[in-house]
Amino acid sequence: MHEERYQTGALLGRGGMAEVFSGMDTHLRRPVAIKRLREEHALDPTLRARFRREASAAACLDHPGIVAVLDAAEVMPTTTGATPIPIIVMELIDGGSLRESLRDGPRLTPDRALEITEAILCALTASHTAGIIHRDIKPANVLLTSAGQVKVADFGIARSVSDDSATQTQAQTVMGSPHYMSPEQARGMTVDHRSDLYSVGCLLYELLVGQPPFTGDSPLSVTYQQVTEAPVKPSAVDPRLSGGIDTILMRALEKAPGDRYQTADLMRADIHRHRPTEIRRHQDLPHTESTQQRASHDDLHRQGQAKRRGAEGGQVRKVQDPFSEVPSTPRQPELTRGHGRLA
Image 1 (cartoon, rainbow, N blue to C red):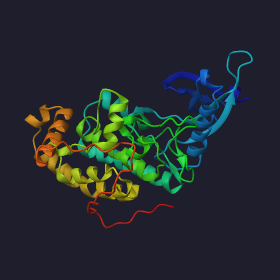
Image 2: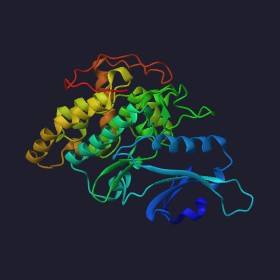
Image 3: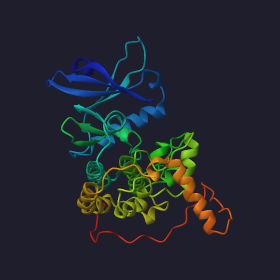
Image 4: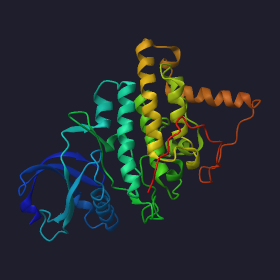
């Protein structure tokens, strides 16, 4: 029946777990996107459960900044006698992902970067209020319509805040993307909505600077830095960025969840208040390449480590065990006096 209702069109994208096709809902005569579990995973109960969880998580969220789930079903594969394959039917976005925009398009202006981040945080406010943690915020999971509207997608590893196993699969495999993963998620600990805010901080850092706060030769290297290293201040990479941007991002990227923004609303309010300042600053300062800008991000990170060792009298600072608890650090002063809410 569902095979008759939904006609599958061109392949739009492919991931490790699923493929996304354009399609047509023949009953309502409207274009849709059809996300289908890959046939080789149809017998995997863990992946089937994850797929169903994505559908139920996104279906309960009704927000213009979140890709709408329209239906969930199972279809029969072309192979005779094979297991039915689950699909998720979603609204079709007439645009591409933020990752594609970063890869193929011009460098975003700071104002546009902040505007996109505000929209993501607005969507996360709705998600968090509904008790859903996304757990995989990254440029590939943010879609941009042809009109420039921001849509958060892929709640594939989302979990309810009431789920105590909210970071791992049954095989105890840490889920998420290393470049945008919070320290507690990297350690396989239980996460809450503040883990998403750390990921947003990583994403905004990349939008403003050109790459995430931590890079490395392997996912393990990046994950280790997420847990143990302090990021280089954005203004050290691009001097046109203001100290206000540094304050916002350093707070979002605190290792201890209690030292970060406590709600998406609070982070969004600080960004919104700061946008006019950043616009004026970039209009006033010419884009001239400095020595710091020519240096790579990794070089700047090593320079920061060397300065810290020098300040400690040449003693090498002991690196904290990445699988131990991260101590709480003194909290930075808030930039706003507003109060967020989280149901």
